[in-house]
Length: 361
Figure 1 (cartoon, rainbow, N blue to C red):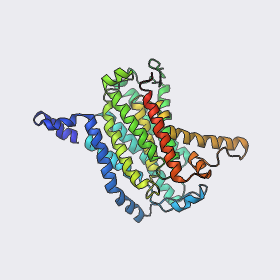
Figure 2: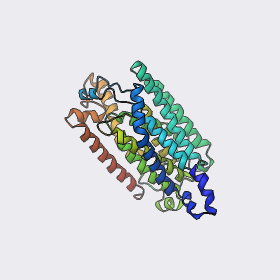
Figure 3: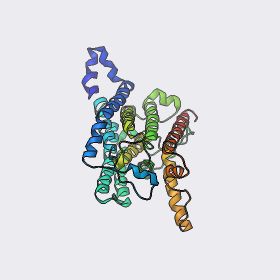
Figure 4: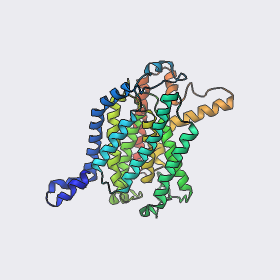
């Protein structure tokens, strides 16, 4: 909105020329989302308490988590509202990638919201099959649009960028659509599995999204992408405004979600944040890098797969003391804050390694 209101005035008043720059609008999109989150956070917590939208702690988790029962949940609505609001204020709304990102966040958020509401009524959310089916449908819609309805991407749409290799970009053809679905659905559910401790999931989300903000800007800038020998994605630089808004909204949410949490994000938050992170990775053609950038999410998801597989194979034995992995460390005697901060540290290290791949090619 601000871009369309003020940038046209730059021909008469040079001060408004700053609205042309993605870096300026990205910074203020993040600041705006953060400010809105901090202002609206307390109001949302009170509203959720009044409506008795509260977390029900599962009996099969760590015993000391029972004290968290009754904490307001569905705080992901705060993240979604402030992220979308800030993006609409600061982004160039004629950019189609902005709308892909917004609709992805809202779509995955709607699936999570449905799950959260059913959990409140019945104790269990929607079935895993229904959740995966809805996620696949949404991912297919986004993938089909990017592959077949975005002519600017026609030349490289189905090519896969491989970290550390400059010239190796295999063309997956129709298989790339399946790959897109796998990345988006996998990331959405991996973030959901990670969301088990106060601030555990939102920390790596902030780190990963901030990392991708840099990658977005570089990929959308012809000279920078040419210098680093990475795929230039025309008009993708504008997504940095949206990703910065996600970082700001997430920081504001972390203010209330840090240990001991005053609010949980719920599936509406975890599914939407994971889905939109996967969407951004696909748009800027750095899908495989997400495995490294979001390494914490990958590890958490793998720990569940290993635990379930080992349990079935051995007829009831456990590979970890408890899964996902963060509960395993709790069972080993690590305090909750220690698990959270150490996972954050790993997320930062993985992000730094990820950024190094842009040059090491």
